[in-house]
Image (cartoon, rainbow, N blue to C red; front, side, top):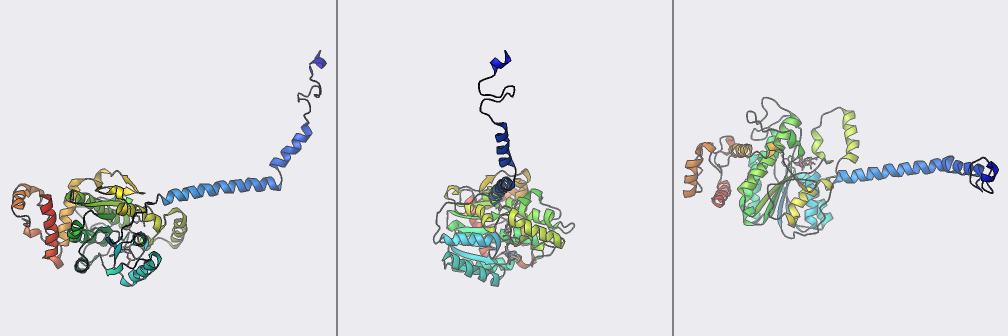
Length: 409
Ligand SMILES: NC(=O)c1ccc[n+]([C@@H]2O[C@H](COP(=O)([O-])OP(=O)(O)OC[C@H]3O[C@@H](n4cnc5c(N)ncnc54)[C@H](OP(=O)(O)O)[C@@H]3O)[C@@H](O)[C@H]2O)c1
């Protein structure tokens, strides 16, 4: 009975189909999974997989690029802190697109070297080396005076310069260095240039802030970190939060003026920003090596700034915070308008600008005064009280603020 059930040609009792040779099959298996070539193929496949993963990871780290090819021939641009890092890459790209660029740097020698290199690479001769030390309010005024004597328009202002986590030192005017350079210097610069920007509408302001603002708080009791100084989580983060609050307040002031202002986080970028890092040598080496792969290149770090500066789609878009070329929502303390108002008034005092708005308690009376006489600040005692070197703001400052008040009323 059982013999009759076995199919013809098969090995009786083996269960294998007819014509199947188990010995030959085992030889094939050996060829596939054992031996030198099998290992070589396996290692190659793993290496390819890892390389693909690393390439994709690196692509993600570098973030999106601004790819539109629009040109800005003849547009007048100021970029602060552009002899190196993100600022230098920003200038290079803008120069390739035909802009007329004022490179505002504190070290004329380094600025000249960068200018010559960028002129060579972009074939654009319209690049100018101008000295601006944001740690000195007088230097800011001198820069603006010279610029205004040279140009009647300003289409794009990029507040890029910055310092991070330096030991506690003071600016020429006696303010904590990171707050002074990253926020106050740019605050004065922007205010003094507002009339030129308004004259050149549609014009743009780009403020380079940082995700470090997430750790920051505006310390009203100790703005200059006199009582307690935290290099990164304290002073740097506070100054970068101040950049955002400044952007928010300024965008409200400039509403419907044709001048837009946006800020950004460039990403974690391999630049000289960490020059004050004071960790042990081995940690520096690890960071240096790791940053080669895990940080953005300066070119990639410039892309969000470039989108804010160039993208026609963002015409009229203002008050935003961008990272990786996209707009992001802000945490509550970075969009607190009461803090932004307070910081604006405080900054005006510290840099010696006349107040744009009366203090909240005097709002009612002052509104009446401003309607009748827009140049009257109504609070003379506040002018320049925070800064002995500039108790009498010049007519340029008065003009800038006056224009803003007139437009708002
Ligand atoms: N790199 C990052 O990962 C990162 C992350 C978030 C935000 N950011 C922001 O990106 C901006 C650009 O930084 P970066 O990474 O390109 O750094 P960077 O390579 O150190 O460049 C900073 C630039 O600012 C200039 N600068 C410093 N102090 C100045 C002053 N008192 N007056 C005028 N210019 C001054 C520097 O000039 P010198 O060369 O003469 O010092 C330099 O040109 C900064 O605002 C920074 O906070 C950077």
